Length: 445
Image 1 (cartoon, rainbow, N blue to C red):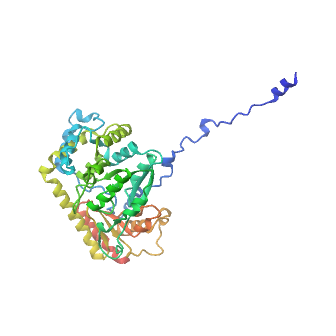
Image 2 (tube, one colour; image 1 turned 45 degrees about the vertical axis):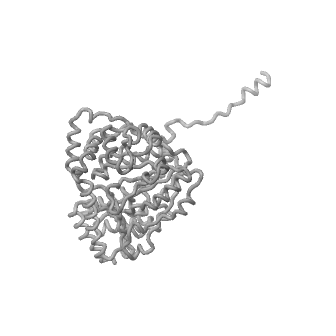
Image 3 (tube, rainbow, N blue to C red; image 1 turned 90 degrees about the horizontal axis):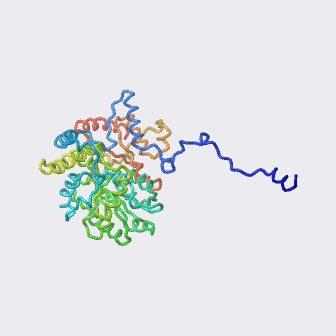
């Protein structure tokens, strides 16, 4: 055998070693979900369930679900819709025309112009999916979205799902919040701080008014200045207005402030918040055709269409709400519930943020002293003080509330570590029973 042939015979090619498929982890998650910790709703609800299983009665004022049914005229509409063939089949991806027309009729007077139900409104599977659709429609990988702290936690995951980078700007609590009852208006946005957060990658600013969890209704002046910044830098505005029917001071919609601001704004709405039916998952987006077009395209790819019979029921709800006097009675009743629960904080001498809208109240618990040797589970002891307060209230007082540092970054969570958030959208007898339990806090003050 020749030397070249011998050499070739003894050369073994270098082949990359490929692991058999069964040896690779098929359950390795995508990065977008791999690092998500257990959410606060699960932590609080599990703690409340465990306490209940131990024989304790827990009143859940944590998550903002209603403790009572939608009005009867809405329920009747839903029941009737279920008997109709067309209401049990796919709706158009943009939403049922009857609902888009009802929303146009209801909101055109607020917007000061006729909203085109064909091009300026899209129905989504809850407000949350609507916001995800807006982010998916306009946010590219690496684009920046400015969010104000404290924030609704779903903003963050939705933005990150779209490939965006979240940039945080805090709403600063009132300096006297530890010692005095303050208005939610006293939580302030530093406009210079907001402008410093804007870069050439900034694509969108998220506004929430009335605000969860603060209850702040942004003033016309504040919204004008935010809107002017967005016009100056050509930045889109996502205005989360899901509590738009529950305001106790004058309420301004940012899209109404100028044609320039209007053309940059997508407004988010929620039937769940409007009509006490958070489980129905019917929401909508309102904006100029060139905005709704692309948010709607994303919505089509996310879920195609939203639940048909409940869209029909919501449409009828909007058609009948004014005749039923629903909007004013709803606002009056919720303000009454807010005042009812807040009586106990006055009794205890605990300062709170008096909300201008929505159905949450932030209470400052800095006067509450938990025993130094109190045993918390590791997933609570490692978190800020408000998580420990939340756990303590569930176990020792029998009332569940939400720790608001969940709605902050590490850099700013100190702003809220002495607060807890309570939801008042419950029956009056439940609120009265909660007040009885909360009076036991006197033993720890």
